[in-house]
Every structure is written in C-alpha cells, then in structure tokens.
Image (cartoon, rainbow, N blue to C red; front, side, top):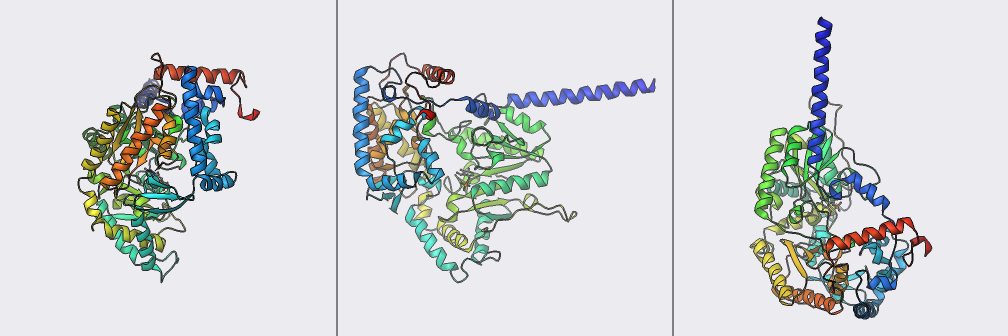
Length: 562
Ligand SMILES: Cc1ncc(COP(=O)(O)O)c(C=O)c1O
C-alpha cells in the first residue's frame, strides 16, 4: 500500500515536472518573433538551402519585368554612373582591386553590398574604392582627391567629428608618452577615466577591454558566474558583436545553445523571463528601438521595399521599465549594450536618455577617443571575479592590451571634453535638431514626389522605400556619385557626427534628393501597378526553386560556371 502511494506521488511529480517543461517550452515558442530572424536554427537551415544564381545583363535590368524602353533607360543610367565611377575614383579603385584577392574582409563586403543576384554585374561595373587619404570637418577624401560628406560615422565611432578624435589621439599620446606601451601596470590617467566612467554610468566598478565584442563577452560571463545560470537573452535582430553566443543563426557556424532570442517589446518575452530559472542576463541594444525585431538593415537584403523603421521613445521607455522590473524581480542581470548608442543619445547614454538603470553597461567605439576599446561598467555584486568564500571559484578575464596607456590617454581626452564647449552645446536639443533635419529631408523628398523616406533615432538614420521595387539598393551608388560616403551596408544606415553644421547638412539634404531624383529619372522605380512586395518575394522564391532544381538554368548561371 505504502509503495503504491509512493509510486503515485512519484508519478504525479513526474507528470507535473513534464507539464511544467512543456509549459516553459510553449512560452518560449510564443516569445519568438515570427520572422526567420526570430528563429535562428531555422534561419541557418534556410540560408544553407538558398542556391546561388545571378542575373545576366538582360535580366539585370528587367528583374521586375519592366518593358524594353524602361530597361534601356536603366541601362543608360547605369552605364553613365559606371563611367563616372571609373573616371572619378580611378586611383582609389585600382588600389582596392590590387588588394582585393588578399583581404578577406574586402571580398566579403564588396560581395554583399547588394542582393546576390545583382552582385557580380554591379561589381564588374562599379568599382567602389575602400581607401581614403584624409579626413577633415565632416568630410573624407579619397586617393583621387574626391571629397565626400561622411555618412559612415566610422561604424558609429565618429560622434564629434574626425578632428576631435585626431586631437584626442595626439594629446592623449602626449599625456602617456613617458610610459609608452607598458602593459600590465597602469598609467595614472586610467584612474581619472575610472572616476569619470563611474560618474557617467552611475555604477560601481569598471573593466577595460579591446573591443565592444569583448566587453559584451565579459559582461555575459560575469552574469553567468554570479547567477550560476546558463542562458543569455537577446532580442530578435539585435547586434551585440560577433561572439558566437550573441550571434545565433546565419553567420555563426555553430548553434548558440545557451541563448534565447526573444521578441522585442512583447509581453510573451516577459513571461519567459518570469518563469524560466536558467536565465542569467538580458542584453539590450537600444539601437533596436529604431527597428525592433529586425536585424541591422543592410542593402544586400533589399529584395523588396519592406524595410521599415520608426522610433517611438515613449513606447521603448515603457518597455525598458517593464524589463527592468522583471529582471529585478527574477534576479536577472540587465545589461545595456551601449557600445553603439552610448554617448550618442545623451552624455549619460541610453540610461540617461530612457531614464532606466541597468545592472551592467557596455561601452565601446567612441569612448576610446578614436582608438580600439570596450568597457564594462557594473554593480559591484556582478563585477567581482572571485568569491570571498570559495577562493578557487573564479571568473577569468584577461587581454594583453587591456588598459593600453595610449587608449587610456585618448579616452581621458574624450571624457575631459564631454563637458566642455563645443561638445556640451552639441548635446543640447540633440533630438530636436536631428528629428528636424530628418523631417526637412522627408519634406523635400515628398515635395519631389520621390518614394524614399528617412527614419531616425537621433543622428542614426535609415532609408526606407515606399514603392515596391527590386532596385532600391541602386540608391547607394547614386548617393556615392553625389559625394556622400556610405559604409558597406549602403542606405541601411547613415550615421552623422554631431559636428554637422546647418550648412553642411543642407548640402547633404540637397544631395540626397538629387541622388533620388537621378535614380527616378533613370527608371529604377518604374513599377507595374500589379507589383507588390509580396509578388516580388514570390517571384524571387520561384527563382530560387528553379535554380536549385536546374543549375544552371536558362540564362541564370551558377558561380562555378564562371
Ligand atoms: C551594440 C554593439 N555591441 C557590440 C558591438 C561590437 O563592438 P566591436 O565591433 O568593437 O567588437 C557593436 C559593434 O557594432 C555594437 O553595435
């Protein structure tokens, strides 16, 4: 009898355990974004099935079934632009071509500037150079002496203008030159940086690293160590550097088995945080506020015109507040990854801008004063790398170049100048200024009846397209021809430095409109009224199926055939 009761109880416990597991699994499924970006394993599988094929010259201009006269207008525009590139960027392009075969990064970025079906033809005709000779004010100059307004922002590093960073590096180097490159011991300037970082972050301890990626790695490692839990939560589409655990899915050959990718700004994600016991930390990249649940917008994914972005400060603030509450309730470490937006949104970064405090904050990019850097600031309880009562149970973190004197010197200059003119003025009315500028450009685009609009998070902009089209990525070449320097993701991300004057900006606004007008004139936005984003996707999908079934098919050819 007793044995029977015991086995009933054991059975009930097992059933409850299994039901709970099932419930947690269902909650997790509900908290995933419906897109492929939200399903990393599926995305990797899908990516591995996408076959290579490319358009021949005829298909290149008629991928949307445009009539012959439109194809001819496009071709003429394309060849004119290609001739301009060949003439204007000759030296720069030649050196780029010289090193192309030997530089893996260059091969990758040049291939992925536009959707792959168009890529080879574009590469053959537009020789985009990647060398620059100098920078000054808000411009950069290439080897041919062509001056561009810089909209790359050097991946977000350039916040206050290149001259500012040149000074930080020069004066910072001067400050530390007597010690030189001695590592292990610190230059006293580092103590000043620590003091300022604690004041800015409102946190207790700091660690220095060599890149944003490493800072994020360290923050997550510490969160795991202190909570004794295994998993990190990131939100769908968010970039946190290229370390495997924060980059599940396409791009990472291994599955990230200790990562949950949840839907941003969604209650179902909070339910998962409330109920699971294995979550050590939540990573937030506040840049996602501009396009929640979408990956960084690069032009190579501009298959159609679905790219959209919209920043709602109140809604994102409310979301962060709720996230903060749940993390506190569940002892989950809340990490703001401010490598990109720190110092750009406000002097005190995203914490100040949204009025929500994190347990840890990672900084990088700009804070190095122009030199490579990653920083973690955190509450004392989560920053310690050892346990008082368990001397052998430590959390390891090293890095040869951590706290490099020259980086510390440039950082000290950066931090010193934050509260001085002209920087303190740049922070005043920052949003009003950049929102106003975005509105101005949108007004001009609307007035000229162009199907292009800007969405922005302060000085970080993205271009969205209003009419279904297969050719939106062409705009990046028209913008370059107008003397605007873009990074390899093209129109997906324009990053302004805060030293743009109204006059500089007016010139950029005119050039954006001129580029879009030229593109419109050249027929790229011609569209059959039947064309929709959905029909575009359907036809591309059909091409993929065909390319998988018959390779090569008709005039679509596989890379091996060339
Ligand atoms: C939010 C965020 N975290 C981390 C990183 C990685 O920084 P790094 O490129 O210095 O490794 C980046 C880089 O763009 C970033 O934007």
